[in-house]
Image (cartoon, each protein chain N blue to C red):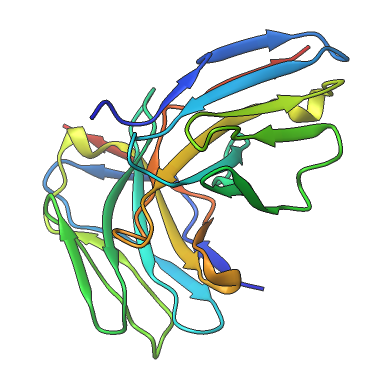
Length: 114
Length: 115
């Protein structure tokens, strides 16, 4: 079945460091791909998305490119801030059955220190 | 637009008791989803409604779980005879199909603790 695998955390970085969180997926068909972020004490928020191969999603300095050939959707940011500390979830939209339940990875906790 | 709301935010109950959670989706959204998130894991799909019709239930949703969306607006999720393994965060999300069909907006969740 469809699945998402993320790099294990926690990821600990100093402010202004470069961030990469790896995400790979297994899916039949052509799913949409998402990154959600969960800040402490808050609900999941959509960070960015890509709906087809080679699309790049971007938001708040974060980017991810839908790579069909490597089945990957890695999250990157050039310079992280303390306020980026959160748990990041990669997800795909399962289009089987004609609707779009989301399948999530286990999440990667990011801690950014001053 | 106040977003997706869930009530209560926290629920502590004793094993064997019944609990009910409520989700109010974004007003124009016709799709509503329930997910469960256990500690250290990503959310897992439980069930899905389009308007008032429940179109799929995950195998994770045992017979002790029931969900309704009687008028196609708010939804309730009931767990009967709770077990310690039911302790988790229960998340609700909504979306508008076909416009924005791939974007789900999540509520803050209801954290259930079964003692």
